[in-house]
Amino acid sequence: MTLKRPEISLPGEDLVRQGLSDLERNQISDFSLLVLIAGPRLKRLGIHVPERPFPHPYEHELYARLAERHGTDAHLRYNSLLRRIVSYAHALEREQAQQ
Image (cartoon, rainbow, N blue to C red; front, top):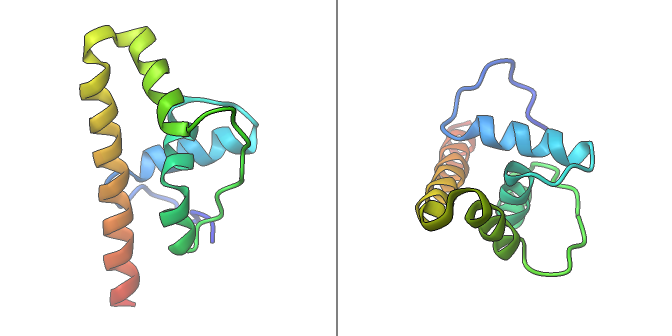
């Protein structure tokens, strides 16, 4: 399954769309790393998440990127991104259960 809905309708779907788009272009971004972090759960929900080999955990890379740009606010931003993608996965699970 890919995200084929024309409008953004679930919380955090914008992050997933951008992350998948970045991965398709082989671009490592905060969003692509976030999608890779959530990859196992997203795959269970039917979303194709391409594998990307990385020398260390995706979580560490995302945090390091955020720390470079945001310093002491990195932890808050990291947790916020994780909460948003968890909200997306949870909303998609509910949507799929209703169908």
